[in-house]
Picture: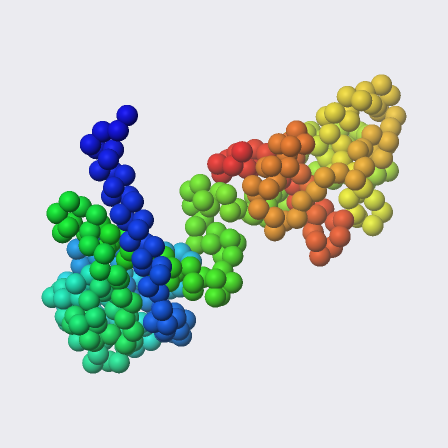
Length: 320
């Protein structure tokens, strides 16, 4: 059942969605000019703004930095008290003010002009002080605000955030920024876990349980017990992976087990994975196949086992 609160919420969301569509339709060559300036930046993108624009500017700087464009938020008030020293001639300034008349930006704008630091202004008013000083203007459509009074920053901040995201993604796609690059900037938390590679989690070297295919089963059992993974890989004369011995294989050959060699008990052509694959893919394979381990094979040395990944390694970092 509709209530006044739900009606208000729906109206605000629809109004902001319409503002975003207006913004999308308003994009022109100035957006490309801003991208060109940012692409050519040898230093960092300095993002600044005051009040609600400052909060949005901080987020835009974080998004740029996390997607491969070095960026930093500089508070305009703090800039007037020494933080201007954070800005160099190799940088590009992205200044945000819906009105374009925020007095706190004045000293930072003057500094950028004095030292010929490229300035991109994001504002809704072309005749404002910010617009007049900018090398490139990213104009926000004047759509009004979504609140009943028309003065609370809603549409304007939503459009500002979206325009900042558009800049970040355009730059990201231009430099072929991949999920692997993104992972390098997000090693912690759930996101870091989801983007972990098999090589980051696998066991290597002497920790890998391996026996030759002609080894007696006593050696295979020793490897399974000592390494603690419940399996052992089996290699041929060339050192390539020939098979794997699991607890299931042991159960199927329990009668006469001591008389067998590893080749007699192993499951040939086991499932393997590339060390550069995402660990999440490894978890999916293990879950689908109802197995607990995957042997890792080096793609540059076909068939050579270089690691072992256990489901517990993935669970430890939050996958599974």
